[in-house]
Amino acid sequence: MVNKLKVTCLQVSAREYKDRYENKENILRMIDKAADVHPQLMVLPE
Image 1: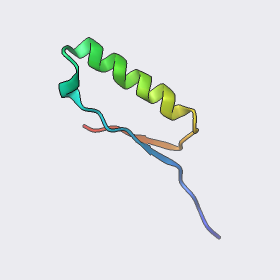
Image 2: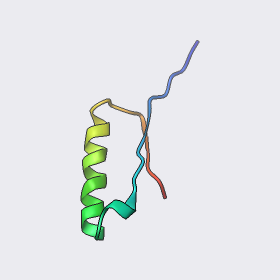
Image 3: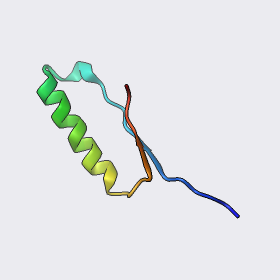
Image 4: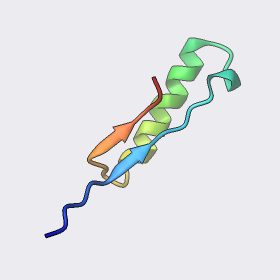
């Protein structure tokens, strides 16, 4: 029997964004987009 786990990894570059709010909004957009593939685990840095 083979068990599969669908994992999504997000790479975020905080240097691209000038403030925390803009960085947070970008991360939330990335999460929404990654959720489209229905991962069982979503990994973000730090």
